[in-house]
Amino acid sequence: MPRSERQSVRAVQPVTAAALSLPLGVGSAAAPRPPSPGAETHTHRGAPGPRPRAEGREAAMSLLSRALPALRLYCIGLAVALHQLLRRLRPGGAPAPVFPTQNGNVAIVTGGAKGIGYHTVKHLARLGMHVIIAGNDESEGQEAVRKIKEETVNEKVEFLHCDLASMKSIRQFVQQFRAKNCPLHVLVNNGVMLVPERKTEDGFEEHFGLNYLGHFLLTNLLLETLKQSGTRSHNARVITVASATHYVGRLHLNDLQSRCSYSPHGAYAQSKLALVLFTYRLQHLITSDGNHVTANVVDPGVVNTELYKNVCWATKVVKWMTAWLFFKTPEEGASTSIYAAVSPELEGVGGIYLYNEQRTKSTDVSYDEELQRRLWTESCKMTRISDVGSRDL
Image (cartoon, rainbow, N blue to C red; front, side, top):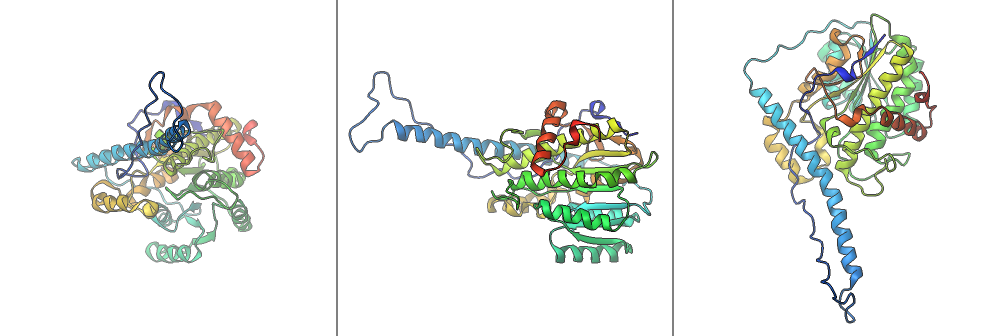
């Protein structure tokens, strides 16, 4: 029976983030001075009156609401990047872990055609797993399958189309997978970073819709197969990729779509915080029912991948100049996901946050069980599935 260890983790400094480069050109407009006592609040025709002053204050507040999430995100990113640099400069270092072979086990990795996901798939394939890449680009996915088969000499690697920005596509993917009549021992949920303001096919803000809701729905639809595949001696595992940006995330239950004041940085951080809350709630429900499945969340660190393609040109330049020193390689970034997927040390252990293969304390609010429950309930409504969170799984 999986044991939840959320409250017994070691406190470690917050580690990992989605970005490193400090924002350029971020500022705030100064609010106009209030009129002096007794001054007229109206002026002669043609001069600005109280309304332009109010509009100026509103504009300044709007700019500040957009700038603060970016500043918080980049500050945590800088802190994590410096932590990674110091860790890299330490003499010696732990040897690469050796994991047992996984012949006969089946894994699904979302976003497994490139970056962290690609190296996760490749390592799992080297261990003998049957790995299914879930992605929305057929040609990219098939090319990844070809390369991994050549490098690992494992023919049990395949691609299935799954657009996490589409509830319909997710359901079709699950139907295709179930048609294979095979078990599922590992599910690895990856995501995106800092996309422009846009909506998914179902009308959700993309960070929340793709990073969080897509994986929420996918996991729930595959949960029955995971439960049937797990055993007392070999639990099935759900691994969800978050980041240290969750430490500065703000979950707005009344505005999960960020309609009131949109910031890509704030929306991204919120989606990552939601993933941590979701993981802990999922483990709570699994544990209460005695199923042999564990759910953990991993933090890959600041990694040099294509996830930065949507940032501004100045940030791209800074990244290009500093990535070799501060950023992890995609292979290094995948190490914690691989550890969570196959390490014997985590057999039966769920509900924990991992960074650099170590148990780490997530942000305090992520342990709020009432917030976990409320987010789960709202997510069920948004994805139109039964609220199993209100009862045992």
